[in-house]
Image 1: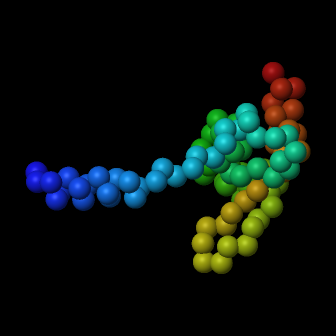
Image 2: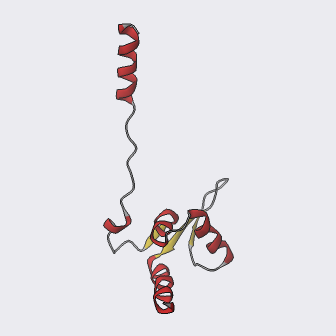
Image 3: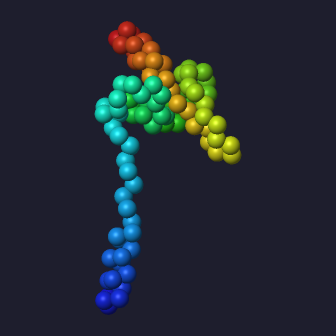
Length: 92
């Protein structure tokens, strides 16, 4: 590989910036009233698709955000999640 190719590779690598990662659920402030599908899925240890199915089936309440021509975005209230987790704890 010549010097020109090395210089190009180094400049290309400098342009690639790592994408910011979402904060882990444990570090989210308790004042966050609406959770994303990914956050709820992480807490319940299920896939995001499962959360979306539960919302569509009516098993979990969610706020539907308007996204024309895209997959619907949901936000789940923390109180709804706490209710679900409370039911699981009482069932044990």
